[in-house]
Image (cartoon, rainbow, N blue to C red):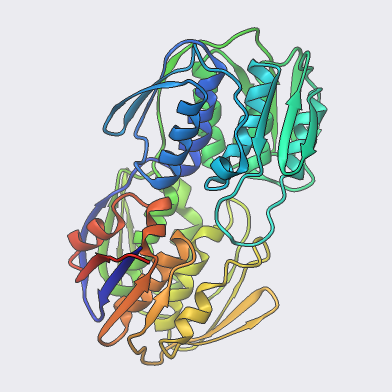
Length: 417
């Protein structure tokens, strides 16, 4: 277990290089299973969720060559070994393997996927999408079995604009006979990134980034080299830090992916300067604002906890509403230990900012809540601690190291539980 120590009232100043997108990396790694030829992926973030996925792929027989953030996967000798829940529970993206197993091997089994405990996230949309392609899915004690003699293209309407279900449908449909149309598809930049890699492998994907994606299936895919887009959620995290505690420049970003975050920071009173591949955010005024989380291109749910921490400094009352994930507010109980004035009303947090925060010992539930508690600690008087800070590694590359580069007085102790 790791304990993160944070000395409050520190000014941040400097530049953070943004890593590759986690939400692109995981499905792209799984997509390498769709071909027998080598696939090279660059700008892969070295985070815990990626390490878990690489371990799963190696168990399936995928050979992996690593050179920093550049990884080459050889899946020629891969087999559809059953992956038990004890192996898949650590990463939700394991669900993507179901469609890939059916598309390449005609069968496979994957245990119930895990991931952040942020409320119910059923995989029924994934399963319905796969079934529309002719894939039979059976659940036996939490182990999902897929079987398919032949995948057939079809129309797939997603009841909700689900990122994960869109990815699952894409990964399977590229090797299906005929044309697949995914309606009400997710439009996140990472969907476009995955589609770009699949296209580089020989797939025919049109419309990624819109709510209708058309895929004409091919007989086989080939290898490719693909560079992942920057992680907009990591960038957004450090942008919010800049708005609260000084001046932070995020480098190697795509500013258009962050327009929703930029607008809220402007509303908050921060100064924002946008370059071609950089965004600089300076603390200025701290105004109360209301935020309603929504699918892209709305304000991202992943950044809701971090912005909630920023609003502790605003002079007035803010309301943050997140109806996507019921338990995304678990950081609030920990912030109350610091004298934060926050109440929960249904799916909204009412934040009465401007009060002096006291140092406290807090517990991290997941990477995003950990980043939020760290930001709260930077605002408090004295030294605060965050228990289970190792969970930050699930989504952030060297989070503590990057904070130190900005001038934060933070350090980590490892203790046995």
